[in-house]
Structure formats: C-alpha cells, structure tokens
Length: 337
Image 1 (cartoon, rainbow, N blue to C red):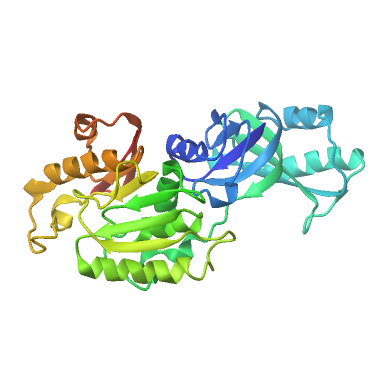
Image 2 (cartoon, helix red, strand yellow; image 1 turned 135 degrees about the horizontal axis):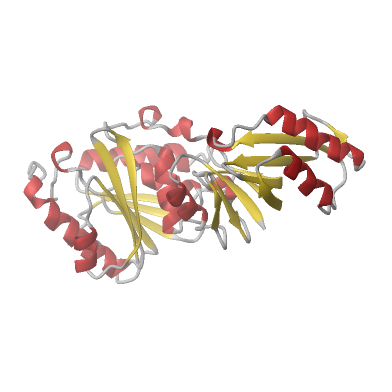
C-alpha cells in the first residue's frame, strides 16, 4: 500500500487524477489518499509525493513512535525523517516528531543523513490521522515554466498548465494514446498531453489560433526540455469541432475548454466574425455529439454546467467537479464516458 500527498484543496478532483495512474485510490485523511499500486507519479499535477505506507494511527507523537517501533523495516543505509502538518489541520510540532522518530531509527541501527539520505521517512499528520511511509516518488513541479504568459503565443484567458495536466491525465493521456482538443486555442491542453507522451491533435476554426498553437507545440514538444520522458507527436489543423475530420472511434479521448459566452467569440469556419452567445448551447451540443462519434471519453471544461446537454447527446457523466478560479469565474469539469 501507498500514501499519496495531494496538492491543492480539492481532494476529490486530485484523487480522480491520481486514479488515472494508481489503483485502489481511497480517502485516508484531508490531503491524503491511500493506493494499492502507483505509477507515473512524476507526471501528476495534483499529487506531490507517493510513499510506501508503513501504517497509519492517531495523530500523536506517542502513537507515531509506537507505530514505527513495531514496524518491520527491510532497508539499509542512511535515513532522514520529514514530518508535515498537512494543511495545518493537526497542530503538531513537526520538529519534535522528527526528533522522536529519528531516535527510533537510530536505535534500530540507522545513521541519519539530513542532506542526502538513502531513505526518507514521511510522517504525515492530517486532522486526527498520522500516516508513516517511505518516500518512493515525487511529481515534477515545473509548471511555472509553461505559464501562458511565458509561451511563444499567448492569449488572455488561457488555461494554466497545472489544471491542463490534471485534465489530460484524467482523460488517460500516456504514450500510444491519441488525444484531441477540437477547440485548442493556444494549445495549452495539447502541450501537457504531449509532455506525458500522448500523440496530440488540435483543431481550431481561427487561423491565428492554429498558427499560435503550432508555435507552442513546437516549443515544448520538439525539444522535450520540460519532460524527463519522450514527448508525443503533435499536429494542429484548422477545423470545426462540430464536424470532426476523423473516422468513428479513431480518437482515444477528447479534452476541450468550451467558449465562455461573452468572454469568447463563438465562430464557425464559414463565419469567423460571428460572435453570438445564443449559439453556445447548440455549439456545445453539436461538439459533444461529434466527440461521441470519434472517442469513448471526453473531458469537458466550461464556465457553466452542461450536464443535461451531455446526457442528451448520449454521454454518461462519470465525474463532475467545480474549480473556482476567482470570484467571477468557476470552471465546471465533466468526465464523460
């Protein structure tokens, strides 16, 4: 078993992303989940660390010490203890905990090395729970390098890379998987899918967006400088989300950020100048209908709830989440099967 340290405040959404690469994900305490197996932790946006779970107990120094004393440890080499009060919910003295657990380990014959230990013991205190585990993997926290304003092509309102990475992971992005964004805009979703190895295709009706997204993909997917793994291939085409140029079932998953009404133009390839919020429901409905033809999974992001439209076009809602951006914008996320 493993314990995962989640990022952010929305545990349900973070756990859903973790479940895309880990099995048996289950709530343990605020900010913590357990899992039966883990993989691809490095590419997750909302999981910071994974540790081999020693066990969990109540959130006291005495119980944490007792748990470690009774644990079987089949490791050799140097150790360090890192204690964490997850979200400040347990009000524990982390330095006191580190000293107490460090003494247990030295009595069991381990040497302490705080700078470059062979093994790191994580003591995670959340509310009334303490989980102990041996650190096994960390996520790569380089999303700041790809913030929208740092990309070769930028437009206001572009999605931040951390959310985009979580979305493509939930969609199942990995090597050998084809991910389509039929309203790709600046291509941020595609960049994150490509960096975890998926082959990505983007469509947009506006030539400016097609050219700009292509620049962004060339920057990140050609060099691979922002990923430790081989990046996927990427193509950007001019096209319409309501008439996708693909055969039935040709795409593995679709991820797209629907227009936000007054904040975005709603255009077609026939009339690029048309901006009509009244056309938004029909646009989303037709896009979801086409998405269902070419893919078995879609992750839809929008500034409003499209549950009824999704179900009317034949999708089953497998997950529904809300992400507050600021006081005037909440993003609604639907995972559709």
